[in-house]
Length: 256
Image 1 (cartoon, rainbow, N blue to C red):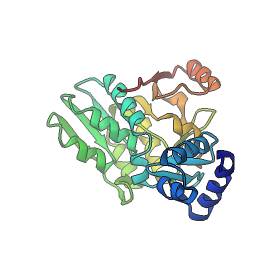
Image 2: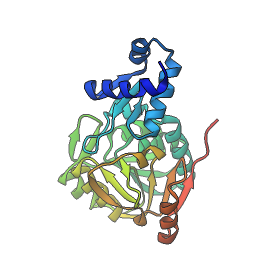
Image 3: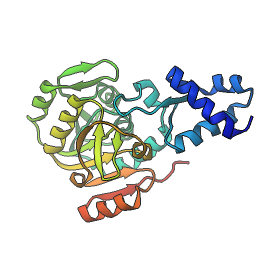
Image 4: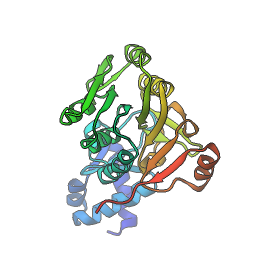
């Protein structure tokens, strides 16, 4: 069976089951795992499926991918973005890291930093940075979202308002072509907006897959961001807008 015949059937299975696995599809079509990976890559490039570890899921504009799937999604790109972002974070500063697997990658990249204070509403970030004895950690309170260790809601927002920090490093779930940063959880959006208000400078860390996603709640615009770290150049029209806004776009080099 040719790829042109397999792709519609893969979509049919995904719509029926919600997700597909590489191994399951390989057995179904009696082809190699590599053949199915190419098929899923093609469907992802067309914006019809979203790759996750071991398979793919349907795109959703109202529900985020599960946390465990997001952890394995574009992990090399996230590590490269995090390493490049960490280079611009000085020792001796205070910063906020919000919820997200990319900000968790930034936490890993801060292991050699000294005399930094990290505020976070991400329990995973706090657990990562425990290994850095030269990092003071402040976990802001709030409603614990068990699915990903995030703290959200009014209590979190009020706690963040008690601080003024040098730098915010935030992520988002999706990026619109017009430069809007989007998310799925309205409570998380309110927290992210407060983080930006309480920060002297702001960094956004987001890989290129965020340009292919849609989410319903608006955090704000890239015009509010000082530096945007990603792994591929944004669409030309958005690159032009970033130049006009004064938002620096930094493309992280691939890691060998």
